[in-house]
Each structure stands twice: as C-alpha cells, then as structure tokens.
Image (cartoon, rainbow, N blue to C red):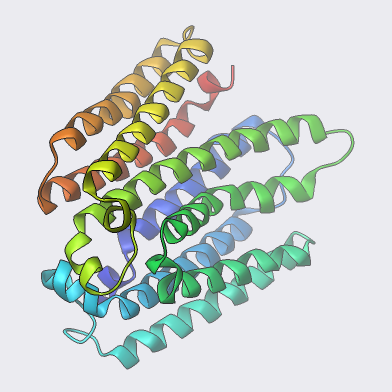
Length: 303
C-alpha cells in the first residue's frame, strides 16, 4: 500500500478514467474514424500512467527535505521504502512507459509520436529536480503535462485516422478534446498554486521560489481568486450559450462543476490554515473529476 501511495495510485486512476471516457464515451459513440483498438488504448493508458508514476516517484525523491517539514505523516521514502528502492521504481516505470509508448506509436503508424513520451518523461525529471523551484514555471509545466494526458488520446486515436474526406469531423472532435485539456490545465494550475500556499513553510526553508513566497500570500490569494472567477464565468457562459436547451447537461454543469467552483472561491477568501488549503485542493480535484465525467453527456454537449 505504501508503494501505491508513492506512485499516487488515485491520480493514476483519474488519468486512466479520463482516457477511457474520451475513447468510449466520446469517440466510439460518435462513430468517428479511430486508430486504436481495445489493446491499443490499454497500451496507451499503461504508457501514460507508467510515466506519470515515475514522475511521482522522482518528485518525492527530490522532495524528501520539504516533505519532512510540510507533511511528515505522509513520508514514505526513508520510512517505509529506501531511496534506492524508490529510484529503482522510477527507472522501471520510465522504461516501461517509454517502451510502451514506442510500441503504440508504431501501432498507429506514427513513429514520430514516440517523442511525446520521451519529452514527457524528461520534463517530469527536470520538473522534480529543478523547475518546481522556479517562480511559476514548474506549476505551468506540470499543468501542461496533465492537459497532455487528456489530449494524447486525440493525438494517437484521432489524428492518424484523418483523411481529406473526414478531416472536418475529425478535427471538430479533436477540438472538443482540446477544450477538456484546457479545462484540466487551468484547474490543475490553480490547484498547484493552492498546494504551494499549503506548503509555504517547508518550501521557504528549502529554497523554493513559489508564487506565495515571491509575491506574498495576499497577492497569491487574489491571483487564485481571479483565476477561479474567470474559469467559473467561462463555464457559465458556455452553459448559457451552448447548453441552455439541454436541462440535463445544464443541471450537471451547474451542480457539479460551476457550483463547487463558486464554493471553492468563497472558501479561498477566508482560508488561512494548511487544513483549509488542503480542503480546497481536494475540492478542485473533485471538480476536475466531475468535469471529465461530463463526457458521458457528450450527446447533449455536442449539440
């Protein structure tokens, strides 16, 4: 169980669920041309989650000192698992992820797509070892990689099947996947900044240059509030303009995405303790999950 917590198994399950929803709740029911069969999508999911697992391990390896201060009760490395064992796990998961990525790239006849896995693996290592210490750069990079874990289904399943005859519908559906990827990017960016606010004590002592350390808590709170407000307004406008004729889809977005975002914004105003920011972080993860589950309502959303 400790090893499963080290690789963040719940986050890996969310990645797998999002990719399965894109494949079987969006692409398959629409009847668009795709490149991946059941085995292919399983291999793509395994490749993505293996690289994400490796990233989680190397992140914890470089965060030992910080986590000792921020969350000593959640420490796994040097408590239940040696650094060498964790590093071995990092190497194994990376090799598996890149190897499976190489296979699935050739499976769809696009060997150049293999670079997606290599670049992702490299970025996760550079993020853990260096980028996360920089002002905002680390937050943006990890949020791009989260968005890529969603977009990658479109890259491998839709794009290789594009022909002059079907390119309009293929690219239209790809645009829908892109919207979900942007949603994931923005929410994850907000969540990463909130986690920096939660971990400010340990980050400050270990030389991090996160947003709350560089510009202060008050300004960071304002920036996060504005980002939340802009996201809420954008989703509200989308609901009003595109879903007003579909009460099921409209009600879902209002109750499970827009409502929780508004609630999170209110909590943020008065948040002061680590517990408050941790609660916010979990709320935003739920909003992201419910956002992805809205793919089950594709027949309403795409009208």
